[in-house]
Image 1 (cartoon, rainbow, N blue to C red):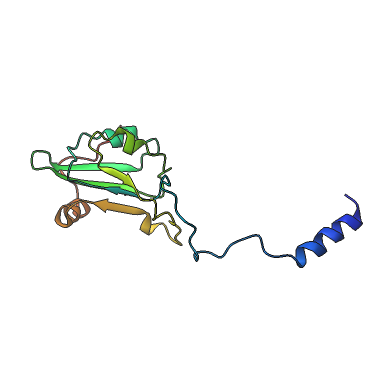
Image 2: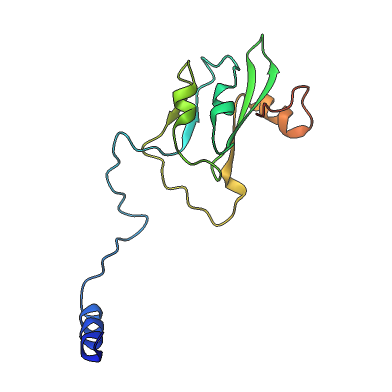
Length: 138
């Protein structure tokens, strides 16, 4: 590259408009097919653990407290999730949905990247100590 071309490019870059957009506002329009944060709906869940077994990133764990009473706690690690949608494909009861409006998952610490889904008292029971049934692993 010639020295004159280098200075011309630098001069043009100094006095041109920025190519970036401000973050986080304004949000771009979300598309319907965008895969953001996963949401778990316990209503239809049977605890079959297909979502856990098929997750390539091992981002989902299920704690089965009482299978007959349908007491489950899901642990979802957003930091490990690749947003591939395999859990949604594997679930026969449509318990997993990807939110297309909740995609900005930036944080300064890793503490907020693990979410627990289930009833409040069941989550407290899982967080308190060992559960009779360990999380389902492959």
